[in-house]
Image (cartoon, rainbow, N blue to C red; front, side):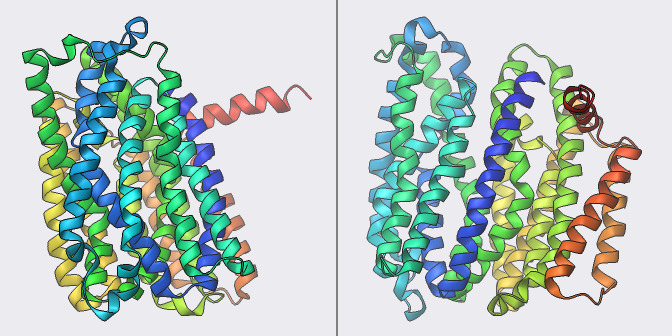
Amino acid sequence: MGIIQKQALRTTVISFLGIGIGVTSQLLFAVYLTKTEIGALSLLNSISNVIAIIFCLGFAQITFQVFSNFRNEHNGHSGFLIFGLIFSLIGVLTGEITFYIFQDVFVGTGDEQKLIRSLVYLIFPIIFFRIFFRNLDVYLRMLFSSVTGAFLEGILLKLIVLLGIVLFWLGWVDYEGLAYVYTIALCIPGLIIIFLAIIKTQKLTLPKKELFDRATNKKMFNFGIFGIIAATSGVIIITIDQLMLNQMVGTDAVGLYSVIFFAAALIGIPSRGIKRIAVPVFTESWKTDDLDKIDSIYRKSVINQTVIAVFLFLVGWACFAPALTFLPKYEDGLYVFFFLGLGQLFDMMTGLNMEVVLTSKRYKVNTYFNIVLALLVITLNYFFISEWQVLGAAAASALAIFAVNLGRWYYLKRVYGLQPFDKGFAKIVLIGVVLTLFISFVELPIPPFWLILTYVFGITIIYWTLILKFNLAPDMREWLLKMKRKFISKN
C-alpha cells in the first residue's frame, strides 16, 4: 500500500490542518452569527453541492472506468482533459438552467426562508466552479495526484472562510459582505484546479478519435447514466437532511444542524485521504484481476479506520457536553452530535466497501445501494423530522448509513468472498462500547474546561495503551516503531 499510505498520509495531514482552520471558523460562526445566518450560508454550500454533483453528468464514473485505457502522457491521454472541460461546461449550462427553473423548490418560499432567498443569486457562480472542480479533481486523482484537491478544499477554501468571518468580527464587512467572501471561498478551488490540471497534463491536445469510437461512446454513455443516478442518490444522502429541515422547520434549524454536523464530521476526516487515492489503485487492480491486493487494502482500511474512528468518537462524545456549556444556544444539540457521530462511525468502520464496488465491473450495484440509501434517508427524515425535528434528522442519517453499509458488506462477502471483519475488529468495538458507557453514565465533578482536558488525555492514554498492547492495529504499530527507530534510537 505504498502509494496509498504516502498520499493518504499527506491528505490526512492536510485534512487535520483544515480541521484546525474549520473549527476556528465554526466557533466564530457560532458566537457571532445567529442560527438563521449560519443556516443560510450552509444552504449556499449544500444547494450548490446538490446541483454540482448531479450535473457533473457522471464524469467521475466515466473517468474511473475508462481513463486507464487512454493513460499515456506522450499523447496527452488522448485529449482527455479537453474532453473533461467541454463535458463540464455542458454540465454547467444544464445545471444552472435547472436550478433557475426549480429554485423555489430548493430554497423554499416561506418567511422562515427569507434570508436564503435574498442570497440565492450567489448560488449560480458557485455551481459553475464546483462542477469544474469536481470533474477535474477526479482527472487529477486518476493521475495519482490526490493531494491537490484535498489542499484546495481542505485548507485554501477554509482559510478564505476564516478570513471572511474575521472581517465580519472586526466590523469591516456586514453579513452580505461575509456571504460574498463565503461565495468566493467556494469558487476559488474550481478556478485554480483548471490551471493545475492543464499544467499537470504534459501534452495538451484536442480529444483523439479513439475517445469517440462506437464502443467507447457506448461505454461512456452507460457509465455516465449510472454515474448521474448514483450522484443524484448520493447527493440526496448528504444534503437532503438540511434541505428538508429548511422546508419543514426553518433556516434556523439548518444553522443548528450544520454546526453540530461539522463537529461530528471530524470523525470521518481520516478516511478521506485513503478514499481519494484508493479509487485509482482499485481501478488498476480490477483491471488485472488482482483480488488479493483489493482484499488486503479492504481489510486494512477497516481495521485502521475503525481504530481511528472509535477514538475520535469517544473523545468527541466525552468532550461535547462540557464544550456546550460555552455555547448555551446549542445545548439542545448534544444527542444530535451523538447520532451524527454514530453515522460517521458506522461509515468508517466498514472501510472502503463503496470504493471496491464502485471500481468493479459490477459498479451498477453501487448505484442501486445509493438509490436504496437515498430512499431510506428521505423516508426516515420525513417521519423523524416530523416527530423530533433536528434530532430526528440526525437519527435518520445514522440509521440509513448503518443499513446500507451492512448491505454493502454482505454483498462483497457473498459475491467476492471479501470478509474484512475479524476478532481484532471485535475487540476494538468492545473497547469502544465499554468506554462509551463509562463516559455516558459516570459523572466527574470537574469544571467544564478541566473536564475536557481530563477526557482528552485520559481517553488517549487508556485507549491507545489497549490498542497497542493487544496489537489491534498492526500497520499503526509498525509505523510508530519505525518512527521510534528513526528519531529516538539515533539519539
